[in-house]
Image: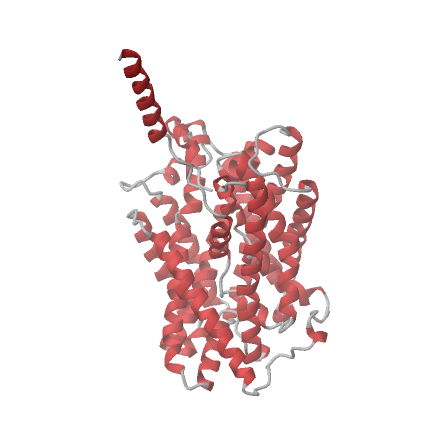
Length: 490
């Protein structure tokens, strides 16, 4: 009996162990592809590329091959081998100061990203209230300030469930309006109406009118950015070596369709010379709905697009700043005032400081006569700052493959050195090209454009973090924050 009891006890213990053992929460590669698509795809860039007509296909494919693919596969290897996100990747591969620069750029790009995103919200709301407001700089600045500070208030109270709002926003404000735009655009052409942009094979490649004629391609690099965020899920795949590339290629296909088809639909309906870079989506909807006498849908579409954009803003508002905060509390990179948390555990002072800068930037929309010019300038600055982070990531990946060849990785990117070389060269080229005024704004002074972009990108992306690092003090380091190092935001 005792032997039987012992045997039963061992069986019970084994059963309990099996019960208590946490089951690995695997996700399918299709699910990962959809997650990636949701975080990257948007209708917002469509008007920017619609001015090129059929050539937008070429201009979307090029950055997808030379930027989207390298960033996706390289960040997957880094995420599967080193926790802690871009700071730990770069800090381990290069140095801690460079790691701080990388996570700073990931945060700093949002300072210009939110005015760009909310500029789109302002122009979209204008079509709901009064279309003439879409080109009014004061209106745009007012919407940016009100929406951003409202977002800070919500985030500072630790509101939860925002991620679900953003996911719903993808369906409500991106997939459904995008599909409707494409469908009605096709019906528009099917009824015999001529396309506003020629759709012949000769128009597949953009006309070369000097380097400035291709500058708009830089904006597509930002459209594809953020893949390093989703790479952290590579360890949740059952077979990362096989499934992650599948997920990436499926996501690339879906993202390209979401980017390209609405852009083409806009080019079918709205002549390039009539496009506003911020209001183009609503222009397209308004024009095509007018053909079918469905203009009563325009305000509904506008509200859906606004909901998607605001949901995305709330999702991203605290994320990058939290990553910077946790690293700064551990290493002492920011002064105590910026590290302070409110009673909800939110970095309110950092968000408020960011908001003050965002408010100043918003005034640019009121001061620059052409709202499209302001929108483009801020888009370029956003891209420039983010590209600095990618340059560091590619260098760190090569150094880690050489210095830690046997370090366990759930996924190993094929031809990593070549991928990093292509990605680094493309990122550097995009960064340099961004300093050249695009042909659409050739009437302005190119030196003023250069000074604004260089001051915004290099000043915020390099000078400010250098000053923080140069004048940091031992008292800025918070010993109790060391336990939070594992929680660093992606």
